[in-house]
Amino acid sequence: MNKRRLTQNQQRQIQRNHHKKISKKEFEWQDEMLGELQSGLVVTRHAKHADVETPTGAIFRCNLRRTLKNVVVGDRVFWRLGNEQLQGISGVIEALEPRQNALTRPDYYDGIKVMAANIDQIIIVSAVLPQLSLNIIDRYLVICETANIPALIVLNKIDLLSEAERIAVQQQLAMYEKIGYQTLCLSADTGENMGELDRYLAQGTSIFVGQSGVGKSSLINQLLPEVNALTGAVSGNSGLGQHTTTASRLYHLPQGGNLIDSPGIREFGLWHLEAEQITQGYREFQGILGTCKFRDCKHKDDPQCALREAVAEGKIDAIRFENYHRLLESREESKSQRHFRKDD
Image (tube, rainbow, N blue to C red; front, side):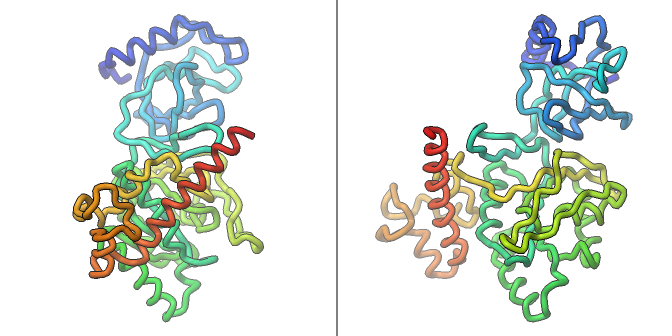
């Protein structure tokens, strides 16, 4: 049992939970039915429950107190074990420990949704089919920069490329390496460079993000064969794969480190970010921002725009600069669609 000290906020939260009457539909865990408070790690998040792992490796399915919101995989929690199981539920999560960080995404109907917490590295998985989308990679990189979480860009299915196509892809990825991002080309099917991915994953807790059909589940099958994650074929009509992961899970890797697998995301919107946050999300802009002639420069046709001059001088890649404006436009379109749906 972990005797860690609770903060005053956590103590008050747990005290409120004890005095709050729980409906019969959520099982009536009486205080005398629960053991002492202990710490644990959320390794699976279901719709209404969460699986908590103890320091010894045992896993228990738990209810969540109503006062707790956005409990996600990677969260460290305080929970209590019941003296018996109630319909497969073994205990109750009482409080969250403070998070190191959190990965969030916007939802049209639910607002901002937390996907995972306490992450050391975000692995952006892309693929050569239907085509390599640098715009999608840039979208994820803005999220990584905003959350202040390091990123690794992984290009899967490299075995499908000819030698000439591989060279072209490496040239595209070089613009990311130039500004300090790490990249890795591999194949889950042939095993090419999978050992290199192992070395990255051993460095802490990582999470795969990327569109459906890029091979995230196939990578997990190679990393953890016993998991046998479902894989989905790329749709012949849209080029997008089907969602193959139904619950977010954390896996312990044999070489060390943890891997969080979350449901596939076809579109990672940025409408929850301010335009300034997207601008700050381009790390190569950092040393140039604030040097434009006008303080309200939109970095388009404004006279003496320092960013545009940096593009002309080759200090900022033209493709990245174009994608930056496309992301801003996409953000405005998404915000408009969100307001339309709310009013519908």
